Length: 82
Image 1 (cartoon, one colour):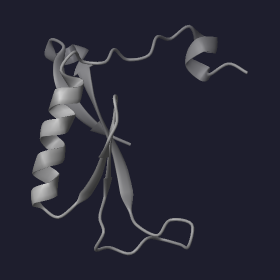
Image 2 (cartoon, one colour; image 1 turned 30 degrees about the vertical axis):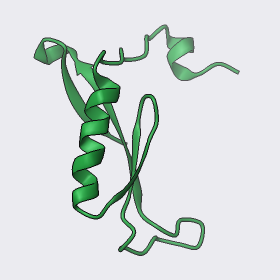
Image 3 (cartoon, helix red, strand yellow; image 1 turned 45 degrees about the horizontal axis):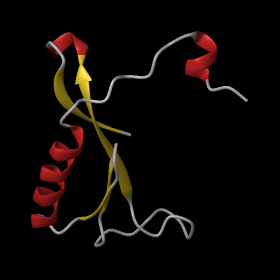
């Protein structure tokens, strides 16, 4: 099975060279606000331990943040949410 990006010939967005360090800095800041995080190589998953989830399968709300180069801003690093 191929992904949509592969079948259309589109290339995945390039990872910014400082993505891991920037996500790590964001993680530290979010901890100051009482949020829980999971830092992975290309993404930061953020959980709010104080808010209820929507259903039994999702006990806590969460979002995934990535850091990528934004081409229309001269390749500067931007955070994107899922």
